[in-house]
Image 1 (tube, one colour):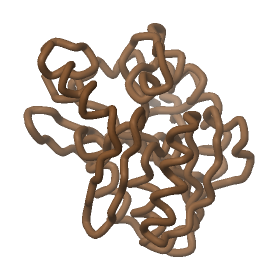
Image 2 (cartoon, rainbow, N blue to C red):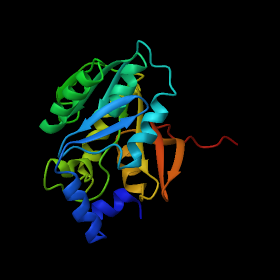
Image 3 (spheres, one colour):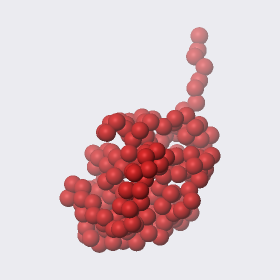
Length: 229
């Protein structure tokens, strides 16, 4: 099982106690010239491989002058990397700790971010050229704000709300990128995308420490047409 999976499912008591201890204090994380402080209760981009894979993919794109949203930005690694590439970046999160963390890391790295506290798109009405999402994806109800980085609700409520909110944006030309673990049963998530008229297209995979992370393009669902005879 991946590190993220082991932490979330608490399969190893020692690892669970270590992560609880480690997360009680602010931690420094450096990545490719970016210098972040990760506050308690905020998803740590250095401990979980998904953020790095998404960041690597984002910086391979041409972003200069484009409007970019890091939805659920956490400590801000993806947002800051995009800002350094010349994008006009909005970083959003629902958690107050993450909003404070984004403000701190924006100033620390001298990279401008438009920071918005928002539950999904509740306070994000503008159009973006690119949206990047590192979502919670385990089917369990979160019990705290920190849990929201991992748990999507026992019925995957996060995706049930997310995909309809993305549908009009995708259809108007926004590029949406999402990272998910290849260890997951992706069928329930893909099903919720289809219900909103969207589909997940695998565009990049990378494996580390036994866990594969997959970048998906979230695109408009193309209906099957019967073959002409």
